Length: 387
Image (cartoon, rainbow, N blue to C red; front, top):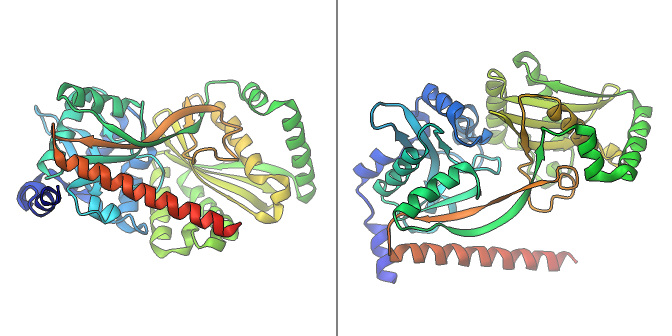
């Protein structure tokens, strides 16, 4: 098995073939990419060109992504797009696999044309084979989503079966419901009464207002407000706030205004008088919203500003006929969003074999399982040391 791994790592497809199958992300025609996004069978705001190109250009630890493109055989129309990096670049594992390029937001479902989903999925998998990969590792994909279902159909036809490496249920919002009914059923009358009491107390610092910045001329100042709030809280203390790293700051200041030009991004802000107490970035793709990040002023923590902002965002999205659902893009069992947004869908990491009876796929699977086990052991050790 060691010999197999060495041969697979040292003698993949030729560099010429690999380059033909994988192209630099910035080489994809942005007009074609935008058109594909409009026709995508499953929305993914984090793989919109304005967002992912900005991530790949400068975001910390996420640069230099390439793409597997799929084109219609009868024309040059782009019908599929999967941003990827090598397994070595992603995890320092020297085996021939490609991994989803992480777009900062926790969703990597590829863009697949709803008018040709099977053709697009077939061509994406073939592009991966021609790149020299023996497997694809799709991280943070909607396991039962339309994009993954198209890939499963093609794999099943080829006698292949994807392997779910890990999964969890993620909070989402059914924005077609009446907002007040939804919130009352989610939180209960007693909790809503307590939150109204806290909001009235916040009013003592100035009238509480909820603002939505979506126009290009207003989103820049709103973004700076968000960045200041995020850096003022626990993310700033840990050194993980966007504005604390030059590459991340460059990415977000490029991506947000660019998406605002096409009405695909807005920033929501809760203020007490003139003081911003919470802000969030929301992406929009087709009929779905994506709650990217939240920042709060921790001086007002006792009033639950993050929850108050999310309540207003829920009302805002439910009142918008263009939005049918919202992805929290949050971790499992998120303590703030899970009690409010009560819908759930499965998100996970999936290993896709590209050839039947391929022993290299077993090596890739074993390496990934071992790495996950090592990370979990390390996390448990850290938790025990903190007690």
